[in-house]
Image (cartoon, rainbow, N blue to C red; front, side):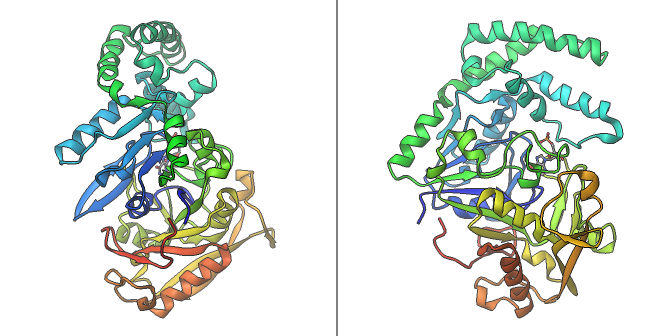
Amino acid sequence: MAKTAVVVGSSWGDEGKGRAIDELAKNADTVVRFSGGSNAGHCVVVDGEEYKLRLIPSGILYPNKTCVIANGVVFDPQVFFEEIDSLRARGVETADIKVSNRAHVVLPYHKIIDELNEEMRGAGKIGTTKRGIGPAYMDRDDRIGIRVCDLIDREEFAAKLKDLLEYKNLILTKVFNREPLSYEEILREYEGYAERLRPYVCDTIALLNEQIDAGKKILFEGAQATMLDIDFGTYPYVTASHPVSGGVCIGAGIAPQKIGTVIGVVKAYMTRVGEGPFPTEQLNETGEKLRAVGHEFGTVTGRPRRTGWLDACVIRYAAQLSGIDYMTVTKLDVLDSFDEIKLCVAYKLNGQIINEIPASLKILAQVEPVYETFAGWNCDTSKIRRYEDLPANAKKYLERLAEVTGIKLGIISVGPNRDQTIVVEENIF
Ligand code: IMP
């Protein structure tokens, strides 16, 4: 059994990663976020109570696990402490959280510029979560970012912020015609965060590598998903980081040989928030029913999600990019009342089957999904706990999905609660 596992989203996010991670986290010593930031919205239900986590790893909902926010995350201290306070208010222990000294800090101007950039894009907007994610990664790549190690160094932070804010205020006033931000206000607010943050900060690269060498079990919690990857996704309608399994190497300082099992989270149908192509989207009653039954509204933004049939071409691509060993199929119960279920098994372009996901969005928008149609099962699966007890039609659908994607079935979830789980393959992690 592998000592490390990575959980990745297989499509455009919101596959139910929070739920899948929660299931796997019970076996882990440490749970790690390695990319993205507070744009994630991991939803976990424990004993009928719903928790929405944006930045802190979902492992926090179990006692005695170390939760790590690694260097690849863009770290928003305001959201971090909001989450800590709300978890504590609900009796969740938050002492064993570690924050990388190398993580880049999200500052107020990142969020404002995210919003203004979106406004400026007009009809071409990306549909970002407006959490400042893209602008924070831009500063990192422009080598002007402020890292956690700078934030907790009073003098360093004051000096860096002063320089940087002069530049950011030029952008705000001259490009966007907005009011400048106050240096003193940001300094005061962030000095407050720095004080509270200090005990959580450490070199998470050293910590994680020591833990791996000591044989501890580490779960890397992917955020966002394959088709939102800055390089592999439907660019430019993507996030600014690497949600694929390779993102663990860069985002947490882990060598590739140390990555064990890779688990892809696949929702039984598909959704997407924000703009960009979505070949199997159902802009019809089927799509509306999927949205209503599946409660498909954004965790972070509340936006209605776009809905459609499961696209095995996308899942195959995710498997290729991340080396997915097992899949966790979530929300199977949402399909319980559908008479007919479709699975896209190939794309046709100008009448020809194609084997890759087109890089050009113009071409991707022209592909025609080739569907296989399955009879629905029309019964309640939410109380089923063993694979063999699933209706035959549900098994047909799942087994065909495993066949066309080349990924083994690992876990199936049939409801939001922890116990609504069917383990197909024991001990994947
Ligand atoms: P950003 O990550 O806020 O820059 O947003 C870029 C794109 O990624 C937008 O289409 C967002 O809707 C999408 N996105 C970012 N995070 C998530 C997520 O956790 N789930 C689903 N979509 C996301």
